[in-house]
Image (cartoon, rainbow, N blue to C red; front, side, top):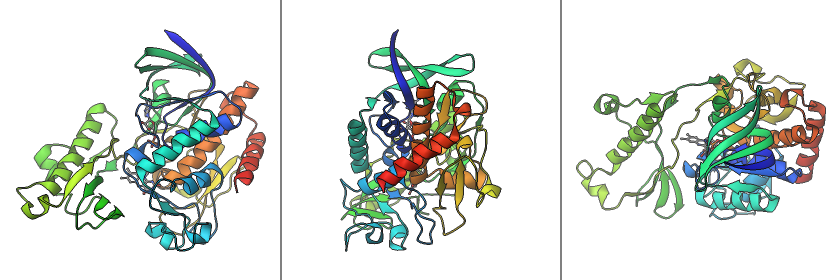
Length: 395
Ligand SMILES: Cc1cc2nc3c(=O)[nH]c(=O)nc-3n(C[C@H](O)[C@H](O)[C@H](O)COP(=O)(O)OP(=O)(O)OC[C@H]3O[C@@H](n4cnc5c(N)ncnc54)[C@H](O)[C@@H]3O)c2cc1C
């Protein structure tokens, strides 16, 4: 089997993985980014998400800086939207989403346009991107991850690294390494890009829009008619398949000629989500797991503050320990698979926060590679200093 060697290896090119890889490469690490799809941005783009949720606390204070702010400002480059005027966007610009109109630091984006922007960021930083490449195995030396095996058109390739980042959205690398994973249930909420004269959800241009889970999508009799679950913890391949097919059935209900002959002529699907629209798949058993009672607490090992995207509310501080698995060494988590549960998982699973934790994981992995230390032994003060310099330079 061919072997490739890097300083930092990032698994998964969602928002967190791109942020981690760009941050590591900008710090000088020879960086690989592994992605099983042929799109960048993960759920945020191939899941047809279109709102870059707020960077602020809801009271006018910016909480998240650095690469997350850079991504927000650039995600509008290939789309019809702008960053809000009060946060530096053009006067009279169109930020798209309700959050921004309410004065929060947020905006809308075209999923396809955002994917093109992310590719530009990776190319500018010099990241070695592996598309259409699935990670299938994780190799350890003792309890420390030392290599992953991927499969692509070349066959199986071993990718060795000095330090690893799991940005797979479901902690799949840590799971393959034998680490413990926490899971939870997901409610089904199908989103589809469609063409329709009359729609109620989100317009791109004229009749092209994204249609979300309306009441008309969701039928009470669904569970009994298909046998598929309306909620699933997705801890098996079968459960994920059922979850996605259940969403498709709901979508068909909307377009079904027999039930809606008058809308069939005008309304039809254009693009389906290419990833299961699961909000939470799995998270690591981290050295610190954030829960509801941790909001408004300060932590010595903070890597960044986060606002609650749902409402103006107490701020969350993010301990570095949420990125570090308790039971596997030499790998950090980033994005929606870091150590958060309950309310904290809700706050931390969204795009701006995934970018913030991705940036921290990428910088931490680079420092670990440079200093030949495992993440649990990293000098936190040095990490905090490096992050602070990077984030100040980006303001
Ligand atoms: C219905 C719904 C609506 C949402 N709405 C919003 C919203 O409006 N605004 C917002 O900010 N957030 C929203 N979110 C949440 C947000 O989109 C995601 O949680 C966030 O983008 C997660 O980013 P991530 O990088 O952590 O993970 P992911 O996006 O899951 O990225 C993980 C990447 O890893 C890849 N991968 C996984 N396994 C492997 C493997 N074995 N080998 C190679 N690659 C692999 C995947 O293909 C993927 O590209 C929504 C989520 C859902 C489900």
